[in-house]
Length: 87
Image (cartoon, helix red, strand yellow):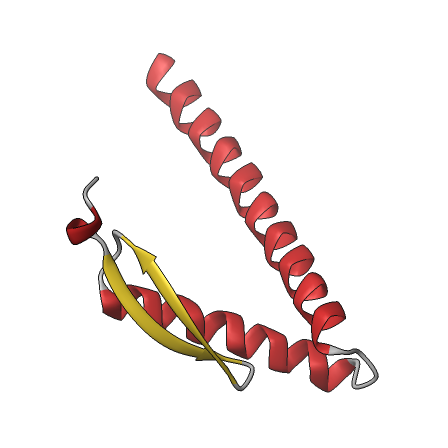
């Protein structure tokens, strides 16, 4: 992918600007950034003693945990669909 094919978007996450480059459209990048920002704020509300680095790591761990649960649910649903199609 050429450099020109990438979208460059500056977002703010937890009061800090980040420039993100990728092939997703700007609206999608802003939406994802807003979800990360909200997750960090939610975790901070429950754990106000955390510094920003600790908060970022906990946000990543929580987000990955949610992702893995969704991935497992998806695999289970695909298995159910495949079983029904095989009948």
